[in-house]
Structure formats: structure tokens, C-alpha cells
Amino acid sequence: MHEGLDRIHITDLTVMGIVGINPDERTTPQEIRVNATLWVDTRPAAASDAIVDAANYRTITKALIAHLEAGEPMLVERLVQELVDIVFETEPRVESVEMTVEKPTALRHARSVGITIHRSRV
Image (cartoon, rainbow, N blue to C red):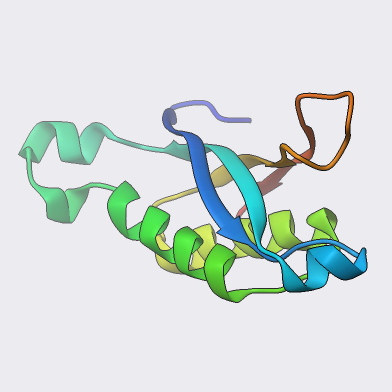
């Protein structure tokens, strides 16, 4: 499935944003944590040592942050899919993404609650 591909990890990207169905969640930004694994062939960048041959994880991360700060989805299910779509739109070298979006303050007795999805470029 991911034969010949390498993995780029974005770990614990934490941004304040609007997500949720409760009235306070619709008006008060809360912490949203994102973890992502991006499957990419890094061999061209390794051979050339040039950023033009690399999947630019800085550009991807900036696009994710902008969406987290500006978007206002009701459901985490929608948000995680939107973020995966942004990865594919931002960086054509990414072949597949596994992403987890968590709301650390959503449940009183749990450290966090979240959803993980895995999508491949169509």
C-alpha cells in the first residue's frame, strides 16, 4: 500500500479554534491538536538536497493552522477530512495521509477525544 514511500510526521500541532456543537464551543475557541503522517517519496529530495524536490511540510503546516484558526465546523469528523483535503491540495507529492484531530478539553475525565482517518490521493 505504501511501498516505496517514506513518512513525514507532524506531531502535536496545537491551535486554538472553533469546533463543536455546544453553544460555548460555537463562540469560544478551544485547543485542537493535530497529528499527521504523510506518505511521500523523499528520494528525489535526498538525492538533490534541494527544497524544490521536497514535500514542504512548513507550507502544509501553515495551511493547516490557517484553516484551524478560520474554520468553524460543527464536527471533528468534518474538520479532520477538511485538513486532509488541504494537505492534498497544498502538496502534490503527498500520496497518503493518516491524521488525528483531538479536542483535549472535550471530556471531563479523559485526557483527550479524537478521530483518526487515513486517506489516499484519488
